[in-house]
Image 1 (cartoon, rainbow, N blue to C red):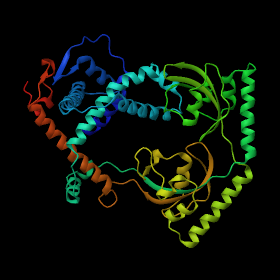
Image 2: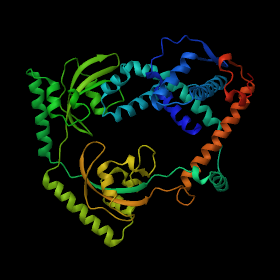
Image 3: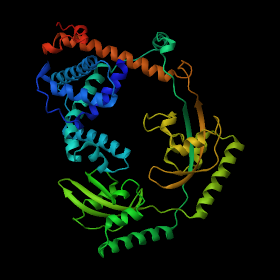
Image 4: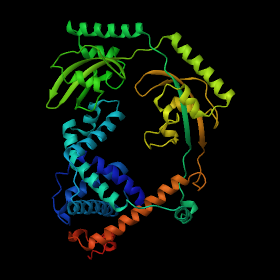
Length: 450
């Protein structure tokens, strides 16, 4: 329960700024940690986020106690940061805010309107509210990293950690796949590129002659994220979009339409909608040049011949990827990286449907037939997939899941060290608790009397 709670509370920290405070709550101080204050409204705000995510809570006071414990831990880290002069510049905080925001943006196809409508705030307001939350997170992370910087774990400690877990309590390890690919990018003819540019210039002329840019974007743009909104991207700041795109977009005047712009995603024309300080709201029409049918057939035939060479000559996959693949990851062995975990292992939920359909037909050590593939930049390609490992759902064990178990054991050791640190710091830190909250069990563990 507590481990699950800690995972959920991390999400709360990222989302608390989107929940409006209850105006009916009469504010009061719940706790003071050093010079840091926790108010009742702040506690109820985080409780509200937790409630919105979990829906059903059988013991509200237990949840409030865990939330308050987490908040006091964060304030204790912030207090220590003041003593240690741990600081982050506004630029560093903004960089993390932008990283977090851009991740959300990528999950909704680049459409900022979806985020604004979900949170009932403008992008500027969302980012403004994010900054103090992100700053506190960064400080807490820095203090915890300092505490655990020299923590290591031995194989015997890993085994001891694993052996103490009752078998019935072990969670199932979900099916996982490790795979690589060899990619062939069919060339796009100069004629196709010229035709794309001509079409975009034609759209530009039609808008200049009175047609609506938004209507043309809805009808013709290859950007699925913005086309339904007339190509509009919403307010963005520098560093959010492709550099080539931004270099043109930020220099447009209101209503102005750019010439054709080339990026990794394809070719665009851009219309300035509104400028607001350092941010702009633009719309675009994207067209992605596609290889001819003949080039696609040649790519499939080439990959099929490569597949036969690899199999007949018993080439090691990474060597084959380095020699034949057009994909950038060929220099790191050709293995596909899971963007959610930064590892080579993919659970089914992290694999797109078409890739999973191919993997499900393979056994480890097999190569697929050539299959269609769309790159991260939306370009048409083909590839053969090599399945390295396929692990069925199972209870964890030290042979197959050592790295997973080691990570859990190391994390437990770090959390234990952090907990000991907290107990020591509580003894020398001015901490005061509102009498209405003094019966929470963690306070007794911390040595704070009722």
